[in-house]
Amino acid sequence: MSMDHRITHEQPLILGSQSPRRLDLLRQCGLPVEVVKVEIDETLLPGERPDAMATRLSRQKGAAVLYNLKQAERNTRGRWVLCADTIVHMAGELLGKPRDERDGARMIRLLSGRTHQVTTGFVLHGPDAFDAPAYAETTSVTFRAIREDEVQRYVRTGEGADKAGGYAAQGLAGAFIEKIDGSYANVVGLPIHRVIELLLRLGAIESYPLES
Image 1 (cartoon, rainbow, N blue to C red):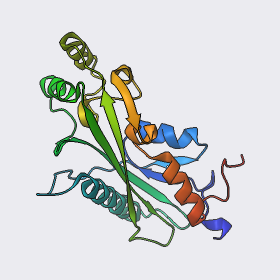
Image 2: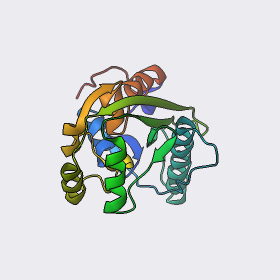
Image 3: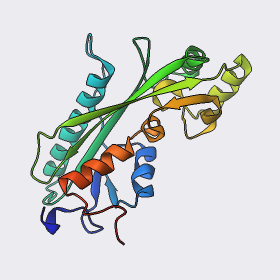
Image 4: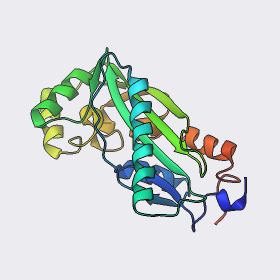
């Protein structure tokens, strides 16, 4: 791929996400990133599987970012766009962002002493590709038994209020996690190993780590 189509500090990767955790994961890997916030309808479709929902929402976010950039008359030549969505689910129930503290407490009790799954879907749009393929990664997470007083104190911190499943693995809830089977970064919000592999394969970056 031409140097004009690679991710550089002059042409950073566009991240279509409001998640500071995804931004942190990408920056920790040395990638220059520009954030474009986007909001979409995240309603579950009847009978939809978690992986299908995660990839569908990531596609919709990507389409919305590209549309917004076009409306703003932004020149996207040579730019790469990454969008993702994370779903927490267990035994067929999807756990989105808690409606309130009571709902957050319900989620933590549900996860206590059990294994649940975290699925992140992501899509990477290349400079000339609108209909880009989407990918999904699933990680299994086992919580230790959580006492009711811990549930109440955790919910009052507000840490999980804006997070799927009502908790943050990289925060205080890390002490609830007994075992993880799969990518920890995926639980945080992005399977960074797969993203880097894809960027290398598609020629968005020439090598890893990037040279400064």
